[in-house]
Amino acid sequence: MAMSKIITFSVILCLSALAIAVAGRVVGPLLQFQDKPSFLRSTFSRIFDTSMYGTLQLNNGLAQTPQMGWNSWNFFACDINETVIKETADALISTGLADLGYVYVIIDDCWSSPIRNSEGQLVPDPKTFPSGIKALANYIHGKGLKLGIYSDAGVFTCQVRPGSLYHESDDAKLFASWDVDYLKYDNCYNLGIPPKERYPPMREALNTSGQIIFYSLSEWGVDDPALWAGKVGNSWRTTDDINDSWASMTTIADLNDKWALFAGPGGWNDPDMLEVGNGGMSYQEYRAHFSIWALMKAPLLIGCDVRNMTAETYEILSNEEVIAVNQERTYFVADSLGVQGRKVNVSGTDGVYQVWAGPLSGHRLAVALWNRGSTAKTITVKWEALGLQSSISVSVRDLWQHKIVTDNAVSSFGALVDAHDCHLYLFTPQTESLRNVF
Image 1: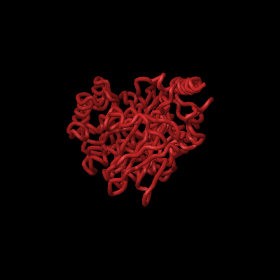
Image 2: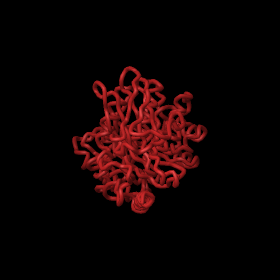
Image 3: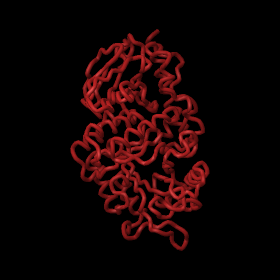
Image 4: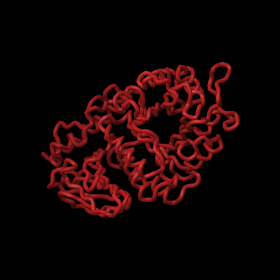
């Protein structure tokens, strides 16, 4: 009977993944059980609620997992040129980061001339992009990578270059003619027009451009985009801009957590780009940053200079086991459940000792023990907080140490976590049927 329950559950997950692959988005909760596994509590689906997933979702076949790549803004800001972009693409290849999934090379603001040409078209800045965007796209594609570009749902970009408001159709066709794969669409100089009115026209323009283009809304969370942007784009910013500090990163993580039940394959909450490697946080803080972004199914967009990374930065960004949590890659399960991980328990003064968790395909859970306090602390997660029966035995693998730390945790698991550090684990319930399958 236990085996039949596990097989039934696995079939349901596989069928769900197939529906996503074929239709782009499915409507309704990601966690649906015909016959719930016995090791789960009745509270499991409430803890990891996905009841709002799939409502009015965009269906262009993209973003089945969160996007991965590199964006120019956090490190370079406006100091960009085609050489930097080419060298970055080269570095993604030579370091092996591209092989891990970092395939989007995204040019942020400042790529265009200050004014449109006489035909009303956007023009690449001739000083910094003299070869043009089409030639750059050819170079990027020749590396097996994808090119992203930036515009704004306003009359100007944030750095006062021409925006795309009222030019959506022409600009989308232009981007398509350049073979652009990705559009980041910002929110500056918007004339006070509500985001719900300004962002859909670009969706329609991209859909009729002749090119399938990933649509990333950078609306800053102003009008709660998780409530409506699923029918517009493939990802949506839920917060203001991140900066390279512990205070900013933790605040943004909390803000993004609010919207966990709305995300899933095809459309993701975006708490902004990674700051890992830019120097404003410690190694432990950057490791926490990367762990929580991966667990939240956030886009993993590198924001440092990948041409000149330290060994510690590379270690963090290239951790295949942590990336696998974000992308749900595993050698024995082919589907992607796509449930955003979330905060499930807090303790201590101001809730600084935290447990974040999210279900993965194959009956597994990703669990983070995050110490946001100023001293080391043993943080313990009880199975009740994870929706597991207290009697179930769980194998625990540390994704930063790359080893199983116990194969028989029962009822709870705890570890000593340094200040501002985060441990990320893979929990696998050890039922007899799962041992037979895996």
